[in-house]
Length: 372
Image (cartoon, rainbow, N blue to C red; front, side, top):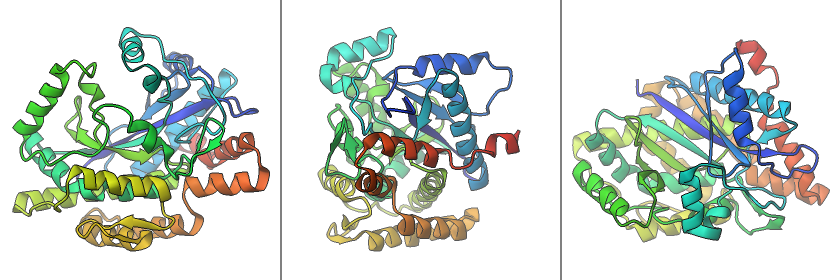
């Protein structure tokens, strides 16, 4: 069974105003002081107004769901101690002037990249899927890249930015695209070619270190995994489970193809970035670009093509029925983007959008007590 894990980035906000608060480092410090430990680790991010929950290694969707719900509940309990809440939003709907967190590396990033770095208050959902070797990992990277825009569309959860409607379902994607090495890649072909390129990028002295290789998917520096980084943080736990399950099955499918010598879907990095732009712009509304033909098709049609492609892997993991159910719910209730837009249309108040998003982030208030 191919194992996997997740990283969820959250905004730390004032529950009344919805304004992000620079308390991420304090919450992480609090977490280290408690005797009752969560199985999820907490870490700081570039901005003080955010925090990341990291799951343990998981073997099933049930384990992933438990880790997601526990991580959200634990992080929020700690945030409440300092008068804040955590919320799963890809960008802040209300205006904010972010603060780069203390530390020499972060200060260097802020100094080097200026406003681009200061505006990187965005929250993503990263899925790590185990690989047997770097060679297998690169074979997987070369074969999953055409399908990653579908995961972005399904997770879209950032239509607002600093008090403004952006016109995008996932504006987070547009913000991240300002950074060097963010986005799609060409095929690497081999682990050596991948390693040579990474070393060359670092030696250019444009980026600070290898951690700033912000590809849509990459080999993890610290774990034997492929790290898929395209998704917005998901507003609710069920969507996060859906994205994690799809990502693992996509990796497994690509690994089977790599072992059999099946070539990847022909696509240049610019074409994939066009598909990402469309997914960022419309989410599940309208069209996506279909891998292979790269022609616009209804989003539901392209999502269905992905699920057909990975169905053998879903069945192998015992996930097929559950993923089908989660996908059906996603199209019925909509993404986080839909939720936020509908709320603003009703309330005309972005603070209310954040308040209701907090409720949606923590829709199972009993999970921590039930699992402990």
